[in-house]
Amino acid sequence: MSDIEASLRYSSAPHRREAILRRIELDGYVAAADLVTELGVSPNTVRRDLRRLAGDGLVRAVRGGAAAADVGATPFTDRSVQASAAKRAVAAAAVRHVEPGTAIALDSGTTTLEIAKLLPSAADLTVITHSLPAIAVLAPRPDVTLIGVGGQYGRDTRSFGGPETLASLEHMSVRTLFLAATALDGSGVYGATPYEAETKRRLIAIARRTIVVGDARKFVLSAPIRVCGWDAADLLVTDGVPHGFEGVDVEFGSRAPV
Image 1 (cartoon, rainbow, N blue to C red):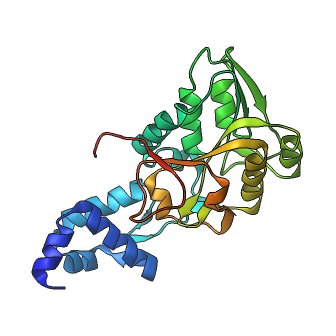
Image 2: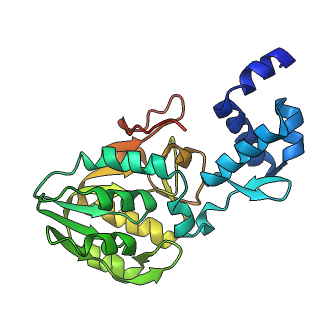
C-alpha cells in the first residue's frame, strides 16, 4: 500500500479502529507508538482510538498500548456502560416487536436489561427472565406479570443458571424471546460458559419467535461456546453488521453519531 493510499484509508476513524482490532487479534497486543508509525497519525489520535475501543469493550487498555479483551471475564457493571447508546437504540427497536397480551422471555444481558426498562405500560405482558437486574426493574410494575426463574446465581452475569433453571423453563412457553449474545458471527450466536449456552438453548426451545439483540461490537468479540445457528433465530436487531452478512433478517436501531 502506498503512503497516499494509507493516508486516505486511515483518515477515517472506523477504518483506523478496524486496523487496530485486526492487529490485536493477530498479536494479542499492540503498542501505541507502533500504531502512530503504522497508521501515520498523531499520538493523540491513537490514544483517542484506543480509549474508544476500550470503552466499547473491544480491547483492554494496558500501559503503553492495548491488549485483547477477555469478554467472558468482564463484570456486568463494566459491560453495562460499554456502547450504552448503541444498546439503548437496539432495545428501542426491539421493543417494537413486543405484542400486547403475550408472554415474552428476556435473556440475561445488558441489552435485554435495556429492553426491560422500555417495555410498554398497560400492555398486559407476562415476562419470564433469569436476569436479576431485569427482575429488579420489573418487580415494581403492577402492569407486568413477572416470573423470575431461579437457580445458581452467577455474579459475573447477574443471572441464574444451572439444572434448576433449565428444569423451571422446561414447562414454560412464550411468544417472543429476546436473546442476548456474548459474540456473533456469520454462523450464529455464542456464549461465554456452558451454563449460559444451555440456558439460552432452553429459552429458544420454549419460544415461538426468537429475536437476537446485540450491538455491532458483538461481531468483533469472540466467545467459546456456540449457542445456535442463525436458523434458530427469526430476526437480529442491531446497529450494524459486517459487510456481506446474510445469516438472518436484520433490523437496525439508530443512534446519534459519536
